[in-house]
Image 1 (cartoon, helix red, strand yellow):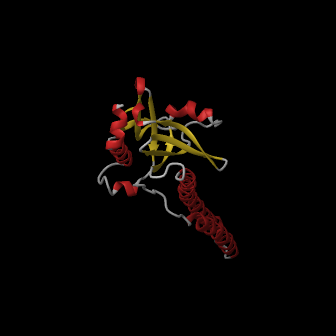
Image 2 (tube, rainbow, N blue to C red):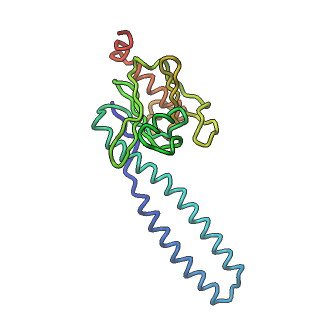
Image 3 (cartoon, rainbow, N blue to C red):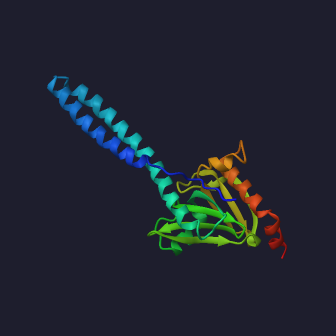
Length: 214
């Protein structure tokens, strides 16, 4: 069964229109304050409100833009991996060499797509409109999949994420995003715990268990 964790998001266009409206209103109100003799205090108040509004729109736009890019990546990868599950994620230092191999200078905190299914687990990224598999492993090479709060983020802090333990104790980690639809199947868990549980379920499926025993 395939889960789509991303929906159509029209909010980015709406946010840009809202920003343009805010600019117009700010100019009009600023002129009105100056004409009415409100002084610099009124100017500072409206400027403060305008800056807060811009910061809020920027934050929402960042989240919306990230989801939009993840949706495009999922659309590009899903025909190549039908029936797989796709989870938006951010890379960690454990994938630094893999990110360098595809020509990226920024190697941590990079938006990517965690994909897993009967064939194993992979990490994909959209580069110039083309899906590129950054890393991939069959289930036979995976020793363990766990959720842990010891994943090092791109900021260097410790966060919750998914850890994939491979042969010779080689580790690959990802910081996963919100996964509401998977959460319906695993209620009460954190996003990382939800993804790890889903991956374990896929890995332990009868067909995959037979592959592990080969």
